[in-house]
Image (cartoon, one colour):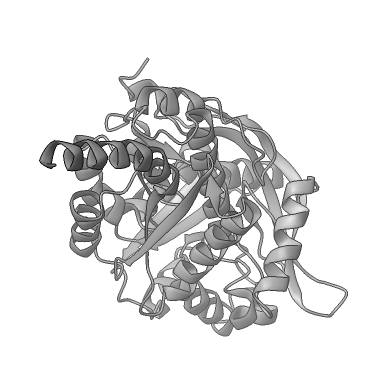
Length: 391
């Protein structure tokens, strides 16, 4: 009797195995900022990742997708703890997200050591493109220097002769100002680094910029800091005196608060909401339908692309996420329809892509939005790729 029971149990196990395999989920951890003044960015990233899953039927490689969202609180130590939790306790197949370069850098070793694929949907510290590049790390955004480098080239085209630089004193802020300096041919009269993320009063820095007699100002301030800086710049009466050039300071999240102060302030970006490809048009339209009253940003577009990149890998291995080498090879092809249009990866897994000049305009409804004005640079590759030891 005992033998018959064992045989029956074995047979049942064999019959159940395929069913269990079919119900196994693809597990994705998503780390972003979901509390505090910068939560507006994290919510846009989460919204866009969810919309991508909707467009995919909430399945990848025939398997349901489970996403675990974690809040880093904009703190590197918290981001590292959440990364460890997702990998060690939740046993995710992929981790995506990461707004802040210092949070990503603190979390990087945990992901790489565990051979868990990490897809940065925003943060692009220079180390990630260079000496800390990894077979398990991909970006769907850019390397930090690239956007300000494009703005530097635009300033050269405009004939700007001198500039005063202002940015936050953390990894991305240093990269951004360095990127501008690497392409701008005029004189950098001075530069100021502010306390990040707590400082939201820029009156002292604006006074220094004015007294420097520089022809222009360049700044990098994302999120709430960008709102405060631009409004204080306008209130100080500098808009008519010192033209402002920016990276990541004016976007669809900040515009409702910056209002007309943002008109006439150029920016550079690899994605703008009006890029004319079909996937982008659908993304923008469906985002505005699903999230009434909101407009997607580049943070969201990059998060949407992160979901599509992960999907391309999972589909390639028919849902078997243990096949890491095959998934890596597929992701390196960038074989999905990106919202920015086609791009390719450098050997360091940073996109080689176009960067556009964006301007603020009023749309048919009288609302402020961003418009693509021109292509500043085509197929731009980051300047740290040669420091990446991968072949």
